[in-house]
Image (cartoon, rainbow, N blue to C red; front, side):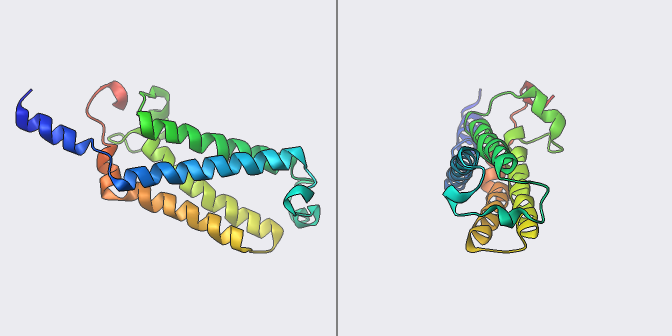
Length: 168
């Protein structure tokens, strides 16, 4: 390996502050959703979280059990799996079938998916509840921030595949 190429490779793999910010955002979303999902499962009436079941009148749910499961799995466990992928960059051959971005690690694409999913989740939630609160604005902004940080050039550069079998 030539010295110039080796130095260039090391520099391109250095974690920027924006990559670390993406880790923090995914961890924050995942851990918070696990807490919220478990709270909704522990008390499907929503009283523990100060949410009466009357807010579910426009939804297909009688209580918060199913929303709690969805919150726990989709926005709790999945962001933590994505965080693991972003941090460790494992060779997930199964994941490349689900991404149109073949030159970037699949976890990068899944980070975008998490951002989109978060925005959609909050939009559906505010429609079903027929209300918007500060927590909705916060989590909608979190979804948009995850997308924006994921799309930043230094983040994209960090997740470019190096030509190994990851790309298949």
